[in-house]
Length: 299
Length: 61
Image (tube, rainbow over all chains, first blue to last red; front, side):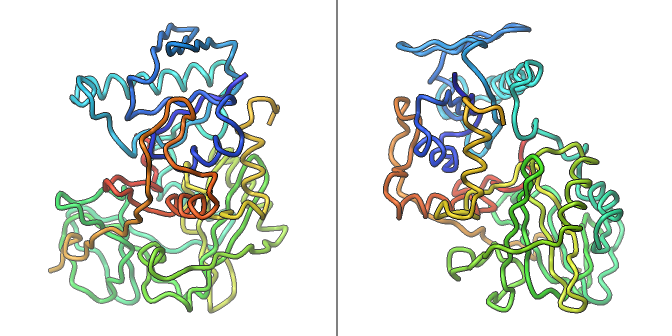
């Protein structure tokens, strides 16, 4: 039996899993390499073949949607918008078929409008402290006091530049589109991987950071995420919150308030990256992920 | 008046030595070497890939 990975050939986490578990446990379909496999898909069955191998539905035990769209096909005609979108549609159909056969693990790709940042805040209020946020369109945002701005979609500008989390306190902002959040006086970033009821929590001391957004310094300032012990009540709250959102997997971001030492919920990334939190394969996260990806386990 | 673009910056990038993708091993990176595996793992911390695509955001559309 095999696990079908729907991803990109540049998805290094899939490389790690395959190197650890063996190539013979996987069928890897890469969005950027549509010529690797011949695929025949009907409403109820799939056949995936290459010259010396062929797999049908009965050979596939699990399917996991990884990161297919981080790179694009370069070969004709898949580099054209028409074929690219047809191919993208096909990948969703494959995931849908796998879901209907009870083989999909982790989350089905969930669009933002079904679990977006504001909806998350609305639901998270029941379980956690949350930061005050406001989304304004064609209306001048209130930047009085301590405020930060974030991108909703993380889409780059035309020149390739990106909007990291940035301090906009008391700045005069245009009446365009803004996602504004109150600035939290935080001593630690806390990130939590939730995986089918298990939680793996890590913290980062913000005193080592030079900027607001740790992601800007990740390759210049060696950062030390260390395991973090969550209160039992927080673990239970995370489980309830994820159930409410209908998520079996996610990476939740919190800040640990320097003022009252409480966790403040920021967001849950429904398909967040996780391998960097267990780079030496020693704190249990990678092992848990192996069990979920292994076609020969029931997890 | 400042726009969101006024605050935009170049995205952080990490360079990882990658080989041609192999359909036999179904991998691109040499993860058997522990130092490469460590670097490859940190590839997953990128918010944007080296091609400028959102990597860790909810980019499943």
